[in-house]
Image (cartoon, rainbow, N blue to C red; front, side, top):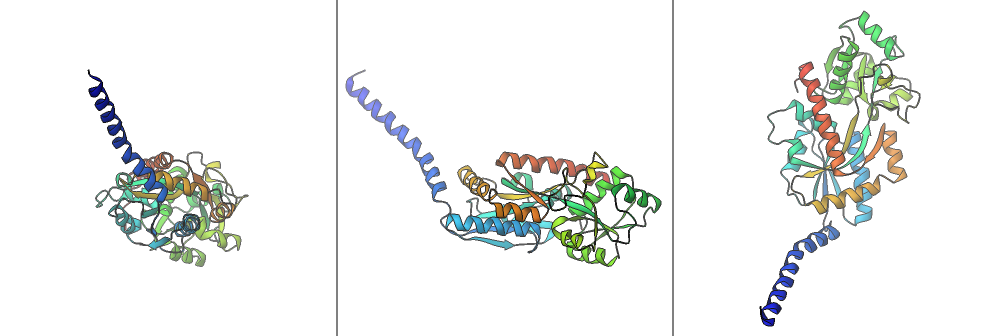
Length: 329
């Protein structure tokens, strides 16, 4: 091979290597520049709930540090499916995020014929918090512990009304799991949302609920409701003297979760940047404290770790949905 040909070959290889590097450099530059315009965080549930509050906390933190607005947009309806579908159909460019929570995973078990597949079409970015529910009863219920409540329920089969935010909601499914493991017969009374369910529980029209701590904690502290136990595997700082259900029924756990997701095919470098930036927010003492006040503990971790939490949850609750023959509203 002549010297001229060698020079031409080296020049070609150099140019080819440079061309191959351009996409990688472009992706890195895009991630470093992101975001260059406002970002929407769609919350598929009503304003004021724990998922909405967490989205606003994270959105404000990101806006202050990244120099762009993170606009919270509530798109409630169909148990979270309306807002979720809006994100599924959004461009996968990092400018439409989804604040996801336990109902999204439950819906994957409840609705087999949706226009989208939550697990397939939403890519997890990061888990924000584990959230706890509590078995709360009206003060008229003559039980102060889980064993006492089980004994009372067995003595009054079908006469204790269990309120939930609707068929197939976490309150309902966590209650059904309790019924199965404890061997009790509680009458499910579905409402259209957690607020009216709590109102009737306070009024004594229903006797028990597996309520999100975010919705019931103030009533518990005021003595208007009695917390028998929390549903998570560990006790919660906001109710340190309240035991877990697991302490009495070892097979029981009903933890909620929430976090951030994006449409599938969102560039990996954007997902990594969001994960890193949101991870920073979860180290903020004010955000940690606020999540604790809502009955939660900070999660964090990698996108893969959050994806496993979701897939494990979907698999577990699908079994409960089938065994209890739960149908959505």
